[in-house]
Length: 166
Image (tube, rainbow, N blue to C red):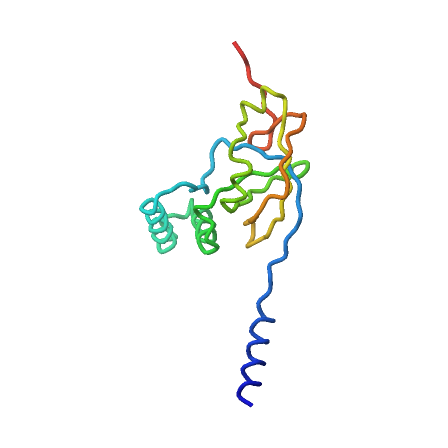
């Protein structure tokens, strides 16, 4: 009887754990000039300092009302263990940009692309990946299915840019 009860409880436990739905997406790798939410490469001491700053701001919302939404967003990133994860900006379609946090393995596939090199070659990078939405405006990809360099113009902050050469 006890074994049957344990078997039933175990089955219920495993059936309740659900895998987060993924969405296959394809978009252009877009480069960013500045990001206030990217702490990739931070040391443990820097990471702890960021956490302390977030906690202080959230404990005193009146004092930090101008940046409260940012601190709340950073808290969500930390909750999902993505505060120090690498991230990319992905241009999906007209006026549709999303930030996608990546695993280290996925990041290795795109780390060597540089905007200036792609600009000189008149190329852009198309990335195909499975995206998991962890929270509102928080997306994650464990792996990148494909990375393809194609003819075109790369984007910075979602816009195509022209260099003025002397």
